[in-house]
Image 1 (cartoon, one colour):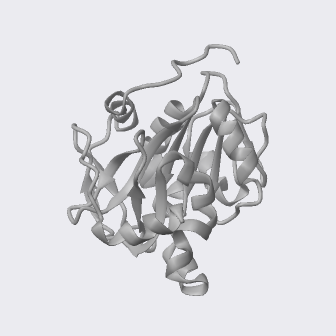
Image 2: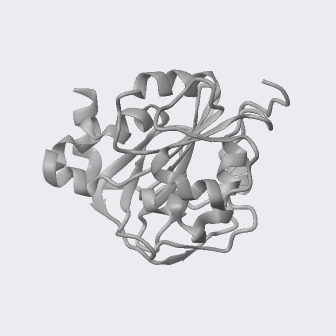
Length: 222
């Protein structure tokens, strides 16, 4: 692709790009988000609630980048316009990359300022960035391979509803979104997180340690 960006940033550099111009983010507009769990060397939190719950996180995998948001509703929220614009800019492998947006996020087409955007129900290799929900894993292998080669993924969802139907113990290994994001060291969990209006700190927040998730780590490696 033309106008290639640097392949890798430190988490601190990436964080500064992602929060540029932000002071707060409002998580009250939609249903409760879920907690995100970070266990990868390159995964870092972007927003952490006062209770220590990670609500937005990012990571780098291979040559690609990912931003994970703890409820898909925030990808359609005007309150998140500035953050989403920052995220897309950081995720793009080149300045002229084509952005694919899942049809469930058509409102995102209206609130971002990008010229090369395409609404699509499925992921395609032609996308430099793909915006998706966390409930469909049919193309997870293709998405992971594209991510490794340099694509960007913006994904939103929550796993607590899914866990009521499929079991809390199955979330880490079987929740569709985790089949995409776990390679990046970020996981959706079944725990409901606090919804509020939270400050975006100038310094990158610390990654909270969730002792209660140790048993789920063990399940991943068995």
